[in-house]
Image (cartoon, rainbow, N blue to C red; front, side, top):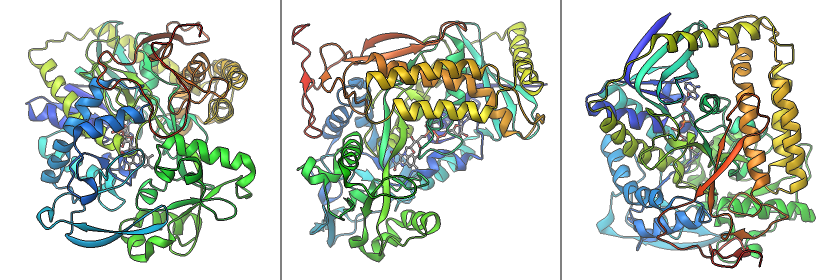
Length: 612
Ligand SMILES: Cc1cc2nc3c(=O)[nH]c(=O)nc-3n(C[C@H](O)[C@H](O)[C@H](O)COP(=O)(O)OP(=O)(O)OC[C@H]3O[C@@H](n4cnc5c(N)ncnc54)[C@H](O)[C@@H]3O)c2cc1C
């Protein structure tokens, strides 16, 4: 069996992972990124709309700056975020955007002179300034006070991912693709790397590293309907859960995006609404301005997704063989805009729906999109619980998003966090001597080999992996969705507890150990069900509504009792529920809790007396 040594091992070759690897490599350390797919196919590539940084170059961004971005981010998080992290992020994002330009990202640029733009379906005129010609342009996104989202048409993720991957090659970072990390090598105190499986041959390999980083993206595939690709399955998170000592932060904070297309749930970017697209109901009437007079379609995602669902519940949805939906209307933006700045949306609509968005309405409804929760880290990106383990990007709970992430803040987080945490890792590696314990490594490899053999030989049972996975997804969709109740969550948790037992009795129909999706799915199934329980049980315990976590039976945001972050552990294999602990949401309060200015909600103030 092959053993590969490196200073930094990054599980993930998306934007966060590659950005951190560049930082370590530039400081003179060896760095390897693992990926399920070629790096440029990482899910960062799918990001369309853009990334937020308060450059303020556009006339519509005048007056913007890190303070305004910070404020929008904290309000967006419904005061659930770590404000020190949000501050670091807002201050650093403009620097990272300019760095990306220097590395080669072809940003859309300011073109001086008159141009028209749309808001709420109405046309307006703006005049971009001569002295800003050629600077990085921005578009409008939800929950922001200014136009702040830097973009390259609607292929931002693709453009930035290709640039970053080139930069990795230049810095000497190795990418080992078609390689899946399946377990951490750790002794309860320190992490020494991972056992990985080659997805071509099925062979196991060990990667031994002084520092290991989880940058494996989101885990949307634990839900049945999601904008996330099949590679966003949380496999790498399950390794941390299995350690018993690394907690997941705020797993109940799950984002639903307003505009997944029906029926495939592929995303059409928030840039559609940012550029002036509107949401219409069955009568082809706008409705968002009735619920949110000021922000309308551009309130934060949690708010828009809730009102859309409410509007459909009130009988205004469009009935279809695939369930109810609403319409997204971008027709008024015109052919040039749609085939230029929204060309991926144009292609998605023509290729996957067979409709032409220049002339036709796009069927949309809220669908799972993003996980604010993930591997809990401190401000330096060090994971709680294990020395030498770090996390960044969507996989992590760093935690700048709290209970709702603003559109455009995730892609920006990948490069900001990747840069900051990559630097911290380089400092950690300076003078770091690690002794790799042979027994620990060989025991972990044997353990993983026996898991694989047991699955292939059906030693523990013959439950069908896909049926068990579907049961998990179904339970989350029913109980831990946009609107949540005690009854629904109790049922969800009970079903997931049964599903956990079933996940331990899975046996494969196939027997191939190499390219075998059934085996890959089976290896992470039990861990996924544990993560689903962290979502459901965390949501059941949190008796308030904050950001995307909406309890119909507890509609108020309760700053008195719940201004805290959930830490979920799976402490013992015999447990049937995660152990939940709580820590303050933020140590430093730069912006005291208040009203978000959108998404009407009752607030129980932090200084109100208990029992009132
Ligand atoms: C359709 C869509 C559009 C979006 N648009 C925007 C947008 O416009 N603006 C914005 O801010 N955000 C957007 N987002 C969110 C944003 O794109 C992601 O949150 C972000 O790109 C995640 O980057 P990452 O580096 O953390 O992970 P990813 O880019 O997802 O990379 C994860 C990496 O981990 C690897 N990996 C996973 N598991 C393993 C394993 N077990 N072993 C080895 N490797 C593994 C994968 O192969 C991949 O290389 C969008 C998301 C979606 C789904």
